[in-house]
Length: 113
Image (cartoon, rainbow, N blue to C red; front, side):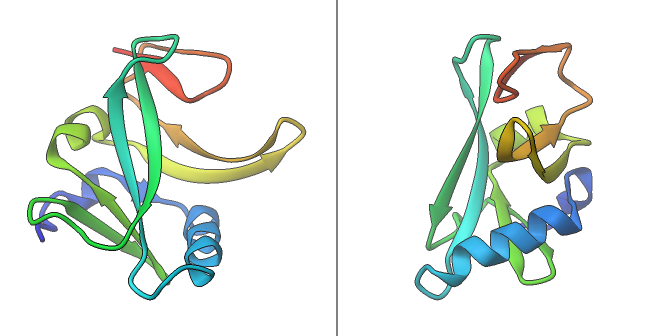
């Protein structure tokens, strides 16, 4: 597993805590995969999945007890981003602050470049 570009995406302590809570109820070794896919109302959308294994070329970001995996293609879209977890009046969710996004939708899960 590659780890050379992990510094290009950061995970906040709130997000790491929430990831650790989520995977605590899953089989040992479960990790959160964050990826970017075509689609959504703004052109690209973020996808969050729980997986039990990393691909050989995944970037692995570790913070506290949490591991986040990002594939190299998605990393190009996420470079410089911060993954956070917010719990506000709109609900609780992971939010990505992406400096590469030129626009995003109201739901916060899709963006354009």
